[in-house]
Length: 458
Image (cartoon, rainbow, N blue to C red; front, side, top):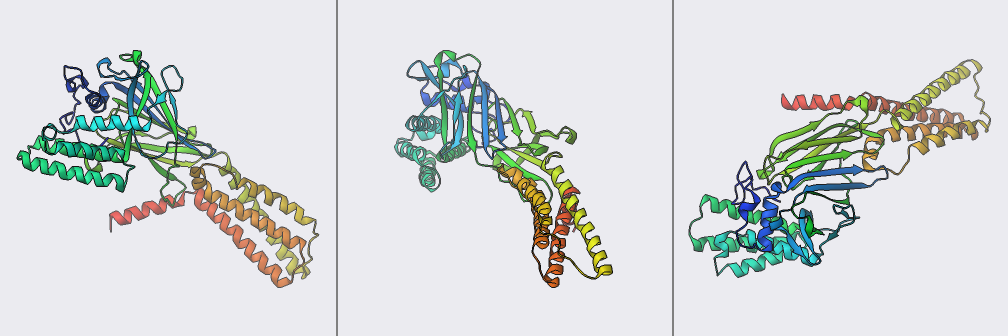
């Protein structure tokens, strides 16, 4: 939904109007029921849990569950003794690997596109300001514009009919006389909802109509694009999860599970209202690093119905796994290179001639090189690749050094090439060692803090 800040005819700034107050005494239409269900959702959606799972195989999956009690007088009747339950607004794009679950744990049916669009159109018609509905000149054109908005595929296709709707409402207001402050907020709220319906569709699930008035658990899950991490000079990766309809449930829970190889450092949830301004930080979870936690959880109660939320997640490398292996391997190869230099200088200074080692000696170096290169490659989640990228680069550098020494041990070369190769390989290993030191000491964090202080105190 959009952010109205509670200034519409359906809710107040601090408290949501009860759903039953929005429904007339006579039998309501499906559109009016949808207005009551969606605007007054906190009265029947008790809890919502958004769980983002980042799998080690590279998949990112969002699992959402709802604890709901659909009011019997607001159920949307469907054929076969079923009822439709509105659960979310989703972007108009293909849903990848969508799974649903009804209260019995069996797959639940979802409404097809034409039925979804019909419900969305009825919802917008019922939500339209009363003075617009009573305008016999503008109302037919408004109905058609709303139909075009719902039928569009988003983007420019939705923007054109929305501008038409905006013009129609403006002309209707001119004919009807000056707008009160309440009318202005109501019209602005309606335009915001209409604009959102051009970019998103109404997601409805079918369940047994006999469950109306009973508290039940509904679920759906689908694949998501991998979260885009922010550029950070430290060993951290920061990404966010946007919750557009943040105030849909009375109690909102958000959970994040990271893949093996990284752990949570912090998760923070921020609430946004009008203008996407940060209203307040609602919840923060800072796990103890000694626990090496992969899962973070925050629970909260939204302060307004029409609010959006954004969860910020900070991940760091786990102490076990590749991090420990890389530290040991890079340090070990560095010690081998250092020891080899002592031997080489001793031979050069006292014996004054260099013997090419036996070609069989290269086997002793190729083995570890292949092992390090194998550990530096793997198919995994992009988050792990982001965090462990410097470690893998260091391992590849060490593997290159061992492979280079193996080639020098197996292939006779001139003294100039021999000395030059030694210098290049030593420089590569020194770079790997410096990269490890920068990464392990978290020196980038100190640089970042210094930049912040210089910017704050120029």
